[in-house]
Length: 115
Length: 109
Image (cartoon, rainbow over all chains, first blue to last red; front, side, top):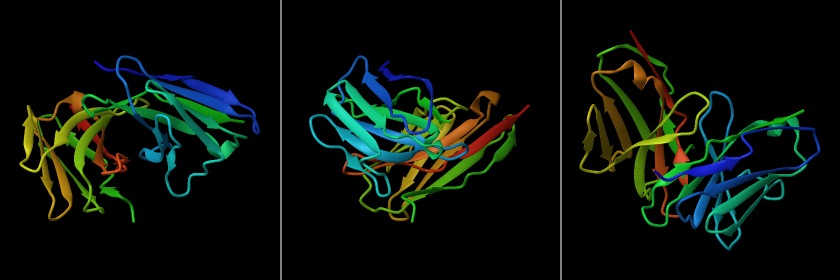
């Protein structure tokens, strides 16, 4: 079946540094990708909708200058957490929507720990 | 108000039991509806889509009531492998997917 690859799976960084997370659709094209954040024992919270070739649409309360999203191709979207702080520690999951079927496929998630 | 509301549970049921989960959504313009399953520390996986006419997939039955903005999932003859968190998902016409908080199910031997 369709696969979404997310990298890195785990990342630990110092406070103040920036971290980039990649999301790739491996065998299908995705004009739209979504970025979610999930805190322990909570559900996925949509952060932003990433559209290929245009600016991302951010949900209310999500700082666009803090979470930079780039969707330069039909198979790749990146999320950069800039100047990360401990409160940014979370599980970040991307999903990609197949152009052909409309189905949503998820990456395996990236666990970010900011020290 | 949250886009999607779900009873978080937990639901602890014996093997073979029937269990039902409910979910409500706030935006009447919501386009499509899904149930996803998430195992601990894993990404969500699509369980089934939800159609207005109701749909069944083996032991799983999903129903949608647009008038009440209500979605349900029924699991019959629960198996140990059904233990997971079940997420109600609503797709908006802008393409965004919103998730409920998830309902935790543990099937007990």
